[in-house]
Length: 367
Image 1 (cartoon, one colour):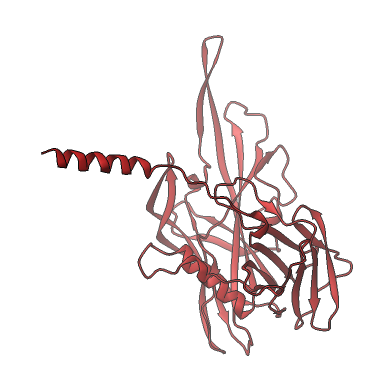
Image 2: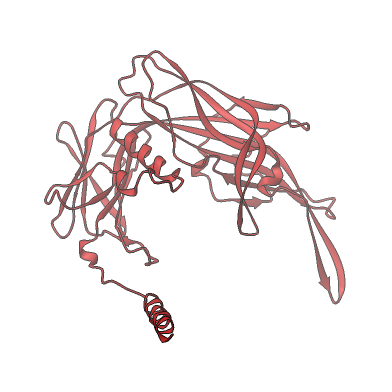
C-alpha cells in the first residue's frame, strides 16, 4: 500500500522541479540583423533602420550602430545613408532622388565586417484606383472593454477601390490608410467661450492590406478599410464628472461634437518578392492556431548575408511608388447614408499626435 503514496510523492517532486526558471545565455554578437528600409518616389530623406534580433524578455531594442549603409542603383552609383541616431541611417535628399524604372539594392557592412545585400528593387510608376466608394454595412469588429477583448457586430462604412489593370508588368500593391477625426469640445457652462478644436487618429484595418493577384486588363474591387459610424466608438461622447470644492459637489459637463471624418489611402506599387513577404506575414497574423497554419520562419525577407550565406538576416528593403487619396465623409443622422467627397491630398500619417487647440489647426477642414 505504500507504493502508490511513494509514486505520488515522486511525481510531486518532479512537478516542482519542472517549474525552475531556465535563463539561457545569449550571445548578442551572433544575433541576426534586422533590416527595415523603404525608398519611394516621394521627396526624401529616406531611412534604413538596423537592429539586432534579441531575446523576447529584453525590454530595449538593440540598434546596429556604426555600419556603412548604401543604396546602389543599377548603374553602380552608390548613395550613402548617414547614421543620424543609433541604428537609424538617413539619406541626403539633395543627393539621392529616385527614378522610375530603375532598380535599387541596399548594401550594408557592419563594424564586424559582415556584408549584406538586398534583392534588387525596381521603382515602378504610381498605381491608380479607378474609383473609391463607401458601402454601409455591419461587420464584426474587435474591441476592448475593461481590458477584455470582445468581438461585436458594428455598423460602419466599408471603403472600396476599383483597381484597373492596363499592361502593368508588376500588378502588386499594398495599401495603408489613416482616419483623422476632427471634433469640438466645450464645457457646457462656458456659453461665451469658443470650443476647443480637437483631433485624433484611427487605423481602420487589422492586417496588412494587399491586392489580389490580377491578370492584365481586369477590374478588381479592393477593400481599403472599415470604420464604425458611431462617433462614440472613438470616444466622442458627452462626459459628466463630479468634483468637490471644499466639500461642495460641482458637476462638470463636457460636450463633444463630431466635426468631420477625413480618411487618406496610400497605394504602394511593390515588387513581387516584397508582395510574397507581406503575404506570408499576413498569413501568419491571421492564423488561428490550426495544425496547418503557416509558421513564423515562412516569412522570409529579401536580405542576404553575403559573407556567410548560412547566417540569418531578417526584414526587407522596399522600393515603392506611393499614390495618396484623401476624402472626407459625414454620416447622416439616420446612419443610412453618408456624404463622401474627394479633397486636396493630406498625409494624415505625418500630422501631429492627437491634441486640442483653442484655434483651428492648419489642417482643420472648413466645410
